[in-house]
Amino acid sequence: MSNNGLGNLDDLFQAARDDGLTDNALNLVISNLNGPTMMGPVGAPLDQLASNEVTLAMNIIDMSGSMSPHAADLMRAYNDNYLTAMEHATAVDDILISTILFNDTVTLLHGYVNLTDAARLTPQVYQPYGTTALYDAVAGGLTNMVLYTQQLRQSGIMVRCIVIVYSDGEDNASQQRARDIQRTAVDLLKQEMYTLAFVGFVAGQPQIGFRTGSQPDPVRKLADEIGFTEALTATLNESDLRRIFHMVSMSTVRVSQGGAITANIFA
View (cartoon, rainbow, N blue to C red):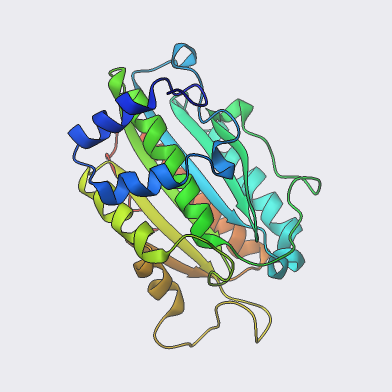
């Protein structure tokens, strides 16, 4: 059985079990093998990698209708303060970027590619509408990351993994369940090479998304529900978007340069 340049999936599943992943994690992967994030190449071919140490950075970005007023600011922040900021850093050839966009559907913008090949967000690509299938997007993203990570490790490549989810509200459209993602996240974190972080944007409309002053903290609550250990509440104004994406870019660079196996993204 082969898929998306990953080679034999049965071998990857066995390698994942050998690395300590339980059926909780592998069942999530299996249930998403035919999902939208598996419709294209999952990652760069092994013979195109320039290093035996790789940092995988996955961005899972909300594109639901409530993000529409902030689309231009988000695109600029992602393009300039994330991608371009990393390109200007030194020794980042081993960073591979993958980006997923989601509303009521999930779209793999691209699998893991070098920074120079990572697609910028444009109005033709980032078009907010619809509802929020956050759990489906996270489940699909973790599926890609687990499979590609196992392929890299089987080839003797050291891997560090960073997943960042950006959303301005809770899930309201998914087939996947939060508890299944949480079980998978717990397994991945035990491997001590994964960083799982969630950015919750405060809504600008009173009846949509996260709201300032809500108790308990809705951003922390959602992060806990999916097993993500890092959580940050931010606004959707231009300066905050630029700050957040720059913070993530610098944390990714720091991990790629061997500062740590995992990162405290929001330090």
